[in-house]
Length: 194
Image 1 (tube, rainbow, N blue to C red):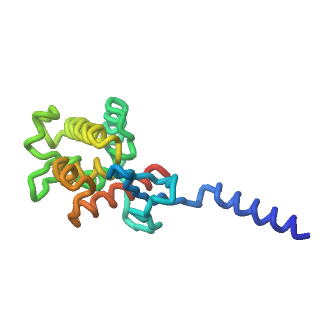
Image 2: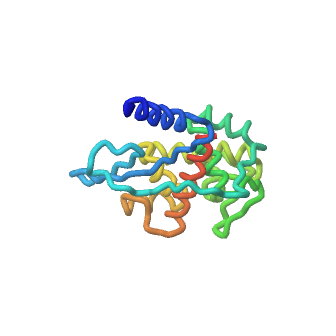
Image 3: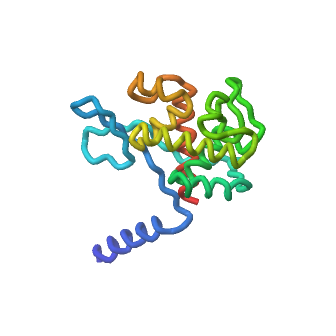
């Protein structure tokens, strides 16, 4: 009689995990190897990895992702090979989909591009959603390549600048940057599950 109970329990658990209403969460782990190289992963492959960022399931009323610019985000994603969900998460964190957003530092538009980067990323009008998304995607892709597609480092560089990430060889210890990386990662994980 014990075997059917165990099978039932396992089957029930298996079905529960596969049901659409169940959400899983991804934590980020960090490991520094003998050469001092920092490795990030969501699946630790050795006991040397330590928890770096814990993703907590949070109910957030009012957390919504505007779909007005999805066609532009899809185009940029396909052109530059940056995941659609990542681009949308960055836009949510940067401007909350406000094309007229301007930061205290002077960053403009959906992806909050700094004026000194307009020319390099072919942006004539930072408030034009298409130009801003294409330019911001170009910039984010360059950071992903620069930091070997280590997403937390690329996001930190997007927020604080690549030189600061290089200086610290990690996410700079600035509260704003640390919170920014966590926020974008949270949005990215939510969007990947939708």
